[in-house]
Length: 148
Image (tube, rainbow, N blue to C red; front, side):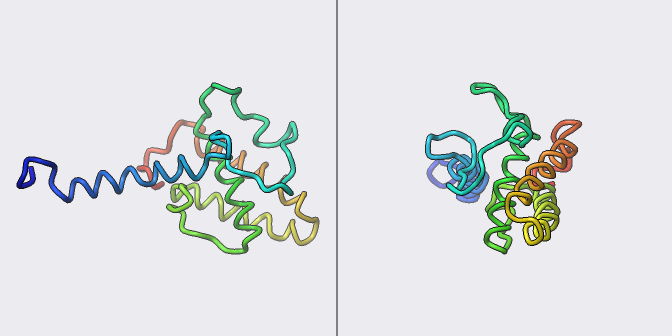
């Protein structure tokens, strides 16, 4: 206990430090309508039956860990591919393992974008993000801690 009966100052910062990423992800990942889908640019193609978004749960149903992973990886892969630089994985709301998937997906999409165009790169991103995230979460949430 602190001097006045409240929590110790270090505990207050720990709680804030743990809550901040959740708040940032919740606000940063929500679209204009408050939905959990990352925003798409007006030029981004809409979902087709074979895309990662097509396997998303029905409205009102919780998304699986693999679905959320695929959405995040797809969104950030597009951002990185367009911006040509990576950010800090924690500021993106990704675990270290998800960040590795992101890097692999973007590395595969770069030459495809140069050779075949943005549409082909988008399809590759959606397919590889879905495949890698499904594999990552096939046995549930990885047990190596929140940053793995």
